[in-house]
Length: 130
Image 1 (cartoon, one colour):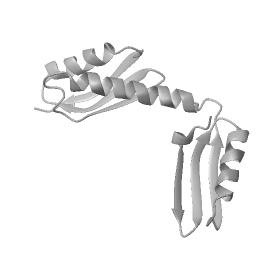
Image 2 (cartoon, one colour):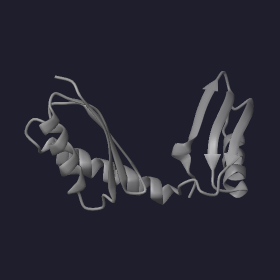
Image 3 (cartoon, rainbow, N blue to C red):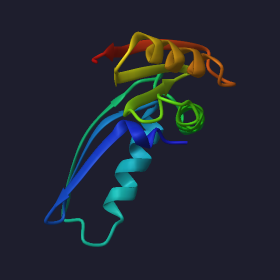
Image 4 (spheres, rainbow, N blue to C red):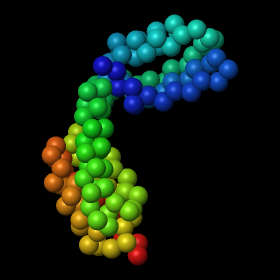
């Protein structure tokens, strides 16, 4: 599966520009061939690095699902759900960023995240701004 979330793509007047990273030369070749087959593509530029450690599509899907589970858990917490917290996950490690109005709500957010099934670790990048 291609690591499509690691690819940035833009298209202007039929010219496609792709950059990012994939796990293998085969993935890069498949992406390039797919772009060239699209009707209306007049040209393309590819700046795609090969990174064998890039996550697979399944790994990305697992992280997205974990992010959703954490957001649902946080939404259920009185006080925490009113604030815009950013949640991201990578290989089961969840990073929380944004701001909360008190240290106690920061603790609630961190502890709630730790309690979600599948969370292997929590990186707390939250700030307290009363």
